[in-house]
Every structure is written in structure tokens, then in C-alpha cells.
Image (tube, rainbow, N blue to C red; front, side, top):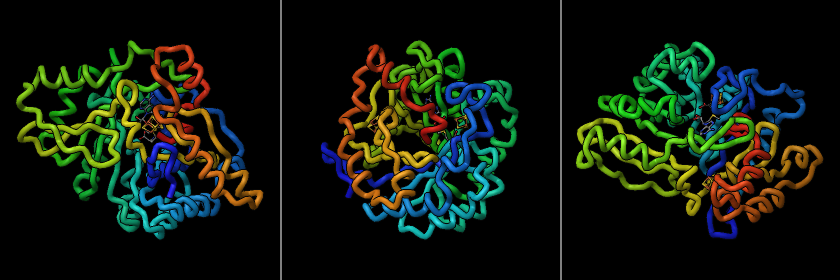
Length: 329
Ligand code: SAM
Ligand code: SF4
Ligand code: SF4
């Protein structure tokens, strides 16, 4: 078992299949995309499966595929098929653009949990934020995945002066659909021009919701184990909403996550710039198990040791961290 110094068992691995993406969301990627790197710098399918296998041996029983955009990976279906042979619960986080192509493969692999990122319900605004023109396609794919009975969550990164005015619209979107909309606080990473003034705190989100629907209409839902999301629903609505407050109030006490980047590095926290290179060790025929245990042991109690994002020392840590698209969010 991958238990750290604070007694947290890490049974949830997020695997980034690629750093690249077919969108260019302003809060995640520079307009010109990220620098291309040699293919040999990334895990091959065989290497990825072998490395993931070590985590499964250590008790990992939940794997989320992410990126970059996981569905642009050319051998996505083959990777999915291999991963489905492990005794794990599979999930994916995607921008949804290519989902229609993979419905059957996802079903065959038993992957039912799909998180789709959608930062606006307004076409023009969505396309501006993502710097592409895929709004209609994504909306169709959201409908398709709901119709195909997937467990769908919509991820919305809220930003001041951008989509804060759509909080109520997103909640109304859950009225007749069994989906969850999750509001995510805008987080700082290398080069994404994060600023406190752009982050919409969980408190502001809840205030806006109660102003519109009334405090008595909001039902607080039980917190699932290891959840990073506080969940609520509006009485009478089919769907629900959640708030992920990674900036103002993260759930580090029960964190069970570790991240494997597409270039084979292991990160013990989203905000940590400390990484160990599993791929290199694997290619040198080294036993990677002690390296995995080492980074679990080195995990800090809270947010990679960042107390407050306002301090200069915090900026040193998050500016030295990768951009979100290369971490695997
Ligand atoms: N491309 C896929 C997608 O967009 O769903 C998967 C990768 S993306 C990096 C994973 C999640 O991270 C998305 O929901 C995205 O909105 C979120 N994300 C990216 N940058 C972020 C930031 N600076 N703050 C908060 N969430 C962020
Ligand atoms: Fe791509 Fe996802 Fe980042 Fe948007 S959030 S640029 S879709 S990786
Ligand atoms: Fe886990 Fe780090 Fe997120 Fe806290 S900030 S919940 S330790 S990944």
C-alpha cells in the first residue's frame, strides 16, 4: 500500500496520456501551445502499461486518464483496452471534442465516469476561452454521453470577469439532467498568469447561488470518501453541483491522488514541483517500486507545503511547477 507519513493511502492514479491538446484554454495553455518534444521522451504504450502495473500492485484501484487531451492520443483505444485488464475503476477527463468517436471503446472497457470540461454555455465565450471553435461539437457530445448512460460531470473553471455571470445558468443546466456541474477555483501554475483577483472563491460561488435560489433550496449532499468536491443540489433538480476549492480550502487531509505525467515522472501533489523520473529508471531496468515509495513518503501534509498562495515563497513553488496541460489535471 502507498501510505504516506500522514496515514493517507494513495489508491488513485491520474495518468496523463499526452501533454498536447486540440484546445488552447487561456487558463491552462499559452496561445501557441507547448513546445514539442521528441517522441522518445514520452512513455510508449508498453512502458505506460508496465509502469501502471506497478501501481496496481501497490493497491491502486482507480485510474483516471487525462492530459493534455487524452482523446487525441493516436493509440487511445489500445491503451484503454490494456488498462481495462487491470482490476481498477477507470475514468477520464476530456474536453469532449472527440468523445463521439470513442463511445463504444469506452463502454467495452467498462469506463463509465466521464468528466467533460466546459467553461461557458455561450458559444462565443466558450470559443474565446478555448481559442478554438468546438462548442457545438462538445455540447452534442455531452448530450450523447448522457443519452448513453455515462456518469457525466461537467468541469467549469470559474474566473472573474469571464464566466462568473454563468454560475446560475450552469446550475439550471442540471435541472433536468442527471449530471453534476463542478465549479473549480482558478489555480496558479507556471505561465498561466494567475492572480488572486481572477479566482472566484467557493464562498463567492455559494453566495451567488443562494442569492438566486434561496438558502433553503440548497441541499448539502454527503461527502464521499476522499472527495475533493463539496456537493449540493437544488431541491427538485435531477442533477447536482459541486465546488472544488483547491485554492481557498483544499481537501489535503484525505488526498489519495498521485500523478504520472506523459513523460513518465511521478508527482505526489498537483502543486508540487518535486518529481521523480520513473520512465528513466524503468528504461535502465531499475526496480521502480522504491522510487514510488520514496515520493509517497516525501508528500507534504498540505498543498506541497504552500500555506497561502499570496506569499512570495508560494509563487516560487507554483512558478517552478509545470503548466496544467503537462501535469495531467
Ligand atoms: N483536456 C482535458 C480537459 O480539459 O478536461 C483534460 C486535461 S485538463 C488539464 C484537466 C482539468 O484541469 C480540466 O477540467 C481543466 O479545466 C482543469 N484546469 C486546467 N487548468 C486549470 C487551472 N489553472 N485552474 C483550475 N483548473 C484547471
Ligand atoms: Fe486542453 Fe484541457 Fe488544458 Fe483546455 S484545460 S487547454 S482542453 S488540456
Ligand atoms: Fe492532494 Fe496536493 Fe490537491 Fe492537497 S493540493 S488535495 S495534497 S493534490
